[in-house]
Image 1 (cartoon, helix red, strand yellow):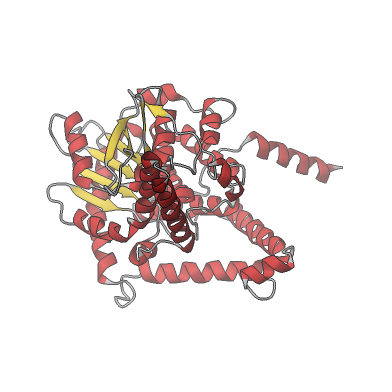
Image 2: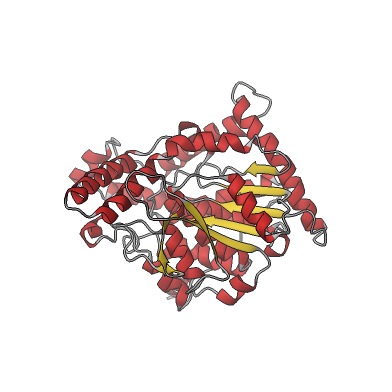
Length: 430
């Protein structure tokens, strides 16, 4: 039986940290939170256990048909042939007719869900050598780039997300006037030099085709048009392509020009599996992939609700007001950009219809691997919560693929963490 002691210690420390942070709230924060009396570590543990139990009953108990409704069963049914197809490719990597594609979707700071899935896939042998195309959108582009570079780069970039992007240095509403609430250049800086520098030679030299989705700037009330960037041939390179796929006008700072053009977040457009298949066919002698695995950054229950969060609605209203004022001032390009932000957020209402079309595809096995609910939101910046999402989604993926649970999910230990642990050990010794 696997030894989960290390993860148990991590979770215990995480709950104690949450309890400590709650006890230190000021009067205003207590009023805003409306959580009542301070909760201790056991309270946070019970809340998560309750959420996990609800998720388990809904997703993992086929005997209780009243809890595992027909819709989710259909998603599970479509996923099984994809799992079998991918594992068959692992067993027979020489069978290049059994082609595979992974689509990593966007979702802001829910990226750790996909990172955990990507780590566990590689642990089970689904490495870049047996995947023929990876498509990444927005946050999914970050994970997709690390994935094709191999497990070592995958682990390193996951730690980067957990430790370096889980702070106000990355997301801070106070920078709204600077038009850089989300500092995407931090990703570019971290990937370009220092400890987290990504090996772009490995990215470009990897086996799979690697594509990023972006949306073209729109004018007036037209729908955002999605296009694909080939990460291995774009100029100035894949890092700029990732930033382009995540860029939101007036929110994420300077938008890089890729192949001489500035594009916006790929998540603003509609997901279209048929277009993804056509992109695959262009690069594979007109043949479609045999198996497509889609990694969304939302748990299944979020998909059912399919409504924007309160913060997203507020931001959409802000975008609408700002766009109106820009139109009156005659700045049509700026107004179109902000309308695109609004449309991108509210398109989630229609995403469900697009997902249902996936089930109707013929000739290609298409499966969606829903992550378990760890409570992440699109703006989460709690590193412990992000790490918990990585661990839970990694173990859930192994379970869904029928793999054996390891004692530990591997991780990259940062220099910062190693130094912190060394100091702690020194203090214990003296």
